[in-house]
Image: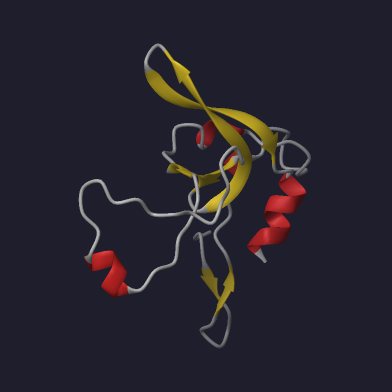
Length: 115
């Protein structure tokens, strides 16, 4: 059988099936996540945001300060592929910046935000 079959009217009726994602014989209770563990994602950290007119943007130069909507000491947002997954704080380890996660968004909340 093909990944996608056409019905009598020629419309696509059956989406692709990925049975190899299920490690339990196909009953859908456990997923074998090994097939996606090497897929790269983009992790980004947002310290804050600012909204300003293009006129002010064009006047920025070295040494300019842009005031952010977020206050000093507030946590930053951690996004994966544009989806908020956690909040954290900046840390310095061996002269390098890092982030310590302080609050991870629950999977159910992440799904709710996608809708």
